[in-house]
Image 1 (cartoon, rainbow, N blue to C red):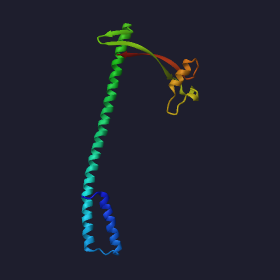
Image 2: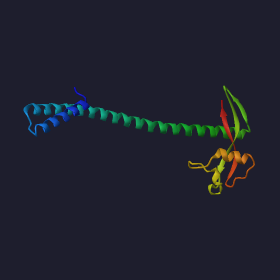
Image 3: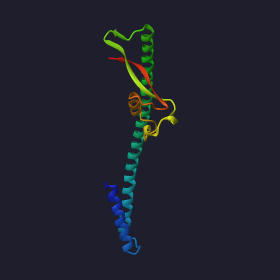
Length: 161
């Protein structure tokens, strides 16, 4: 079977031949046109099947991606809830470090910039993306600079190793 490129090239050649014969359609040209049209019909069927198959696979990929995104969010919520409960329990008992079987739990201090009033923060801390450069804000505040609209907040995050 001819390729789609060959079929269209043949059709162009046939069109040129009909034009050259001043529109007179000889039996040979008529036969060649019929054969070429049938070749196009068969090739179009093959292309159509391939396109629909690819669309079905694309939809399946899209659906699987949505399913995995939903699963990922559910797992992250589960982690957040379990870590929160464990943190609360350790704090209730006043425990900073705990050996629990093969795991060692401890709290790690970290600081986080909290934007309290975006309108008050100087323009130099604004990033091209939506939001502010929190690392730059943290560096400035840690160095003793007073940045209107932002403060450092100390957090205690649970670590499991």
